[in-house]
Length: 439
Ligand code: ASP
Image 1 (cartoon, rainbow, N blue to C red):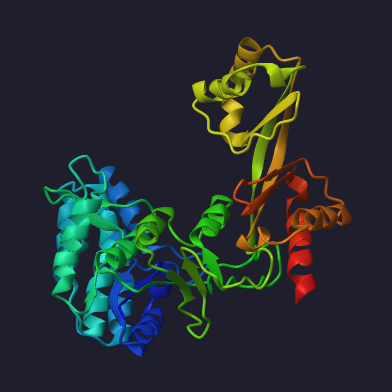
Image 2 (cartoon, rainbow, N blue to C red; image 1 turned 180 degrees about the vertical axis):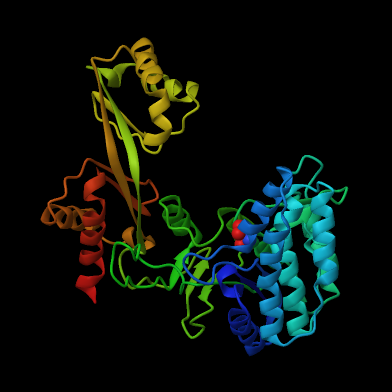
């Protein structure tokens, strides 16, 4: 078995956390390739090293003295090295970083040093080879990620190494310039390593025991999800529940490599398995509940719209012309609503109303704002009768008025629109009926 293990920032924020990660890696021989993030927050108001590196570069760009902040960054690493009791001299590394910042090196280089240094420490601590991500993760001249080249180079290098540490978050362009992924991108590196070496499992170690069935800020102690499919995860993550970087999912999905999301602080918890498909029967009808506030709806009413060829297209064209995407388009015989992100809509409001009048000559346009969308997701819903009925009776009991319903054609999700102020109550009511009532 080959397991690729990625540790997030909070799992490597201090020497104490590093030790936990080390114990986890050593506990299984199959955990052969390690992808570290940069040190994250040790406590709520702490700073992530990546953010400190960005500030350092910003200060340098303004011509200000950045030595203090670089010193603070160094302190973070020195604490880890000291606490682990390894002999690793970071003098030379920090001198190079300081010099390169002074020479005006690109921001991505500076940001990437968080992972790079954590990689050096991890390799020294475990006593296994360090592979600089700049050698194996490739971007093209324009800075776009080069999937094929990365796969080839990564496989060629790692084939010869039964174990290695590869820092997350960055790679390099053909001329050697460092380039990072978007924030949280160490997950992507982890998935690329897993893909290139055909790993059996990609373990993503973080500070939560996998995905929870609902947001713990809304529902008290929500039940963890044991198994979730990639499609279910997409539905939930689009509704705000993100544990993994979106772009990390596709390389793995293509190869059918499962992801196990685990908690560094509770390695005894099994975490969540993310799989392409499974015959593992979910314990509950629903897999999870996600949601987001801050939507607006634009409802267009026009008698006989259903007989008008191209009506829907013309409506959507108005949104397209404003450069806007839409979330949902529930429609009735003489009505057509478009749900959009309120924040994005506001600057285009008048342009869109005028556009609609011009293009479809509606009888009436009604706008509603401060709406929330809730996604009830679950592969188990397809087989179960009455899911929608249960959702609506739960919401009625909780005195929540349902503004919109949309069942995805895959029968994998039911989207419910409510007012922002009913958002939490609605999620609690749905959770109660599907989970608490079944416990
Ligand atoms: N350190 C980077 C960030 O803070 C990447 C990562 O942690 O995945 O975004």
